[in-house]
Length: 319
Ligand code: UDP
Ligand code: MG
Image (cartoon, rainbow, N blue to C red; front, side):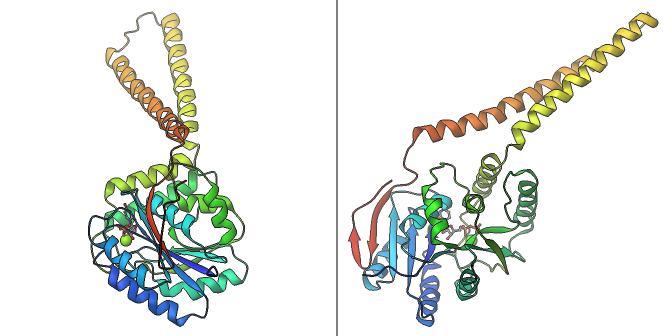
C-alpha cells in the first residue's frame, strides 16, 4: 500500500486511562482531514493494559501503526523509535499520548509546513502544571539558551511537525543520550514556532518524575553546550590569579612590615574552597567522559519487540 502523507507519533507508557480518549480524538481528526495519515503509537514497555489495547486497535484499524519496545526505554527513546518507524512522506507530527498537546492543531501546523517551514515547533504560552515544575522548566530553558552553542527555542518541547528530510537526518544521528528538541534545532532548515496553551493531562499521572526531568535537563546541557567545561577552565584561571595576588601581597607585607601574623582560618578556608572547585571540575570532566563511554559501546538505542503495520504483525527490525 502507498505510504501516508503524514504520520502522527505518540509514545505511551502506562497510558491505559488516557488511551480511549486519545484514540477517539485521533480517529476523529483523521476522519476530518483529506490527507492520508497514519498514527504511530509506541508502547514504551507499559506494565498496564496499554499494549493490549494497542494490539487490538492496530489489528482492526489499519491507520494505526504500533511499535512495541522490549522494555521501558524512556520518553526520548520511545519517540526516537516512533520517528524511525514513521512512514509519512511529507512530515511527522509528534505529540504526547496524554493529550497535553492537542492533536487538533495539526491542520494549523501543516499550513505552516506548506508555507515552506521544515520544522513547526509548539511554544507553550501557559503551563498548567505545578509551580515547581513550571519554574524549573522556565529557568532551564533560559539557562540552556544562554549557554548552548545552537539556538534552541524557549519553552518548546517535543510537540512539533517535522518535515521528512529533517526526520531523515534525525534518524541518522546516532547519539545515545538524546535530547530531541535540541537535535531538531541542530538540523536547521527553516523553523518556526507556533504558540499554544498546553492542556492538562486527560487521565492518569505524569511519568516524568523529578529524576527524569533532571536527566532530560542534564542531557540538554551536556550535549548542547560546552559551557560547563569552559567555565571550569576559566574558574581555574581565576583562582590561580587570586592565589598569585595573595602570594604577592604576603611577600610585600613580609618585606615592609616584618610583623605579619597570617591567619590559619584563611588557609583552611582556601583549602576547603578549592578542593570543592577541583572536585566539581573532575565531576564535569567525568560527565563528558561518561558520554564518550556510553556512546563508544555502540549499542542499539532501543529494542523493538514487535510492530503492527497496516494490520500485519511484523518481525522486529532493530538498529
Ligand atoms: N512516556 C514514555 N516513556 C516514559 C515516560 C513517558 O513513553 O518512560 C510518554 C508518556 O506516556 C506520555 C509522554 O511520554 O505520552 C509524556 O510523558 P508525561 O505526560 O508523563 O510527561 P509530562 O507531560 O508530565 O512532562
Ligand atoms: Mg504529560
